[in-house]
Image 1 (tube, rainbow, N blue to C red):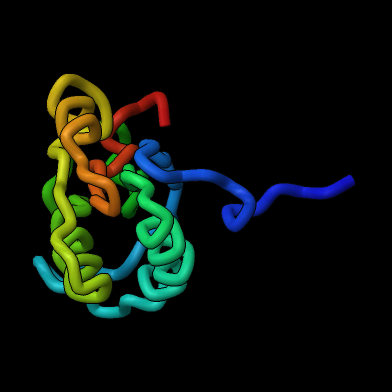
Image 2: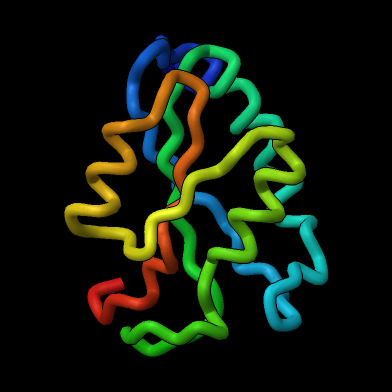
Length: 123
């Protein structure tokens, strides 16, 4: 049986949800080890080249189902933008109207990082 990979998909103009592992160490607002972010770059670059509108989700730390500024993915969005060489939009929550609106507004090749999914107890 042939397994599909991202290389087999037509992503032009489609919103593509990607669960990434951006559980990286932070010192304040600075990512101290970007290895996990760098590991996603080939996949993200391929999707962007093919016109995908990327919506990324990750967890960070263990905020126990409530917002904790020390576990925010906002600094990761900045580091990802630096590594991709393109702006990365950030949604202050991973669900709700703001996240939906920002994901719908993405241009082809655009990237949106959602806030930490572990801010919700359901995660």
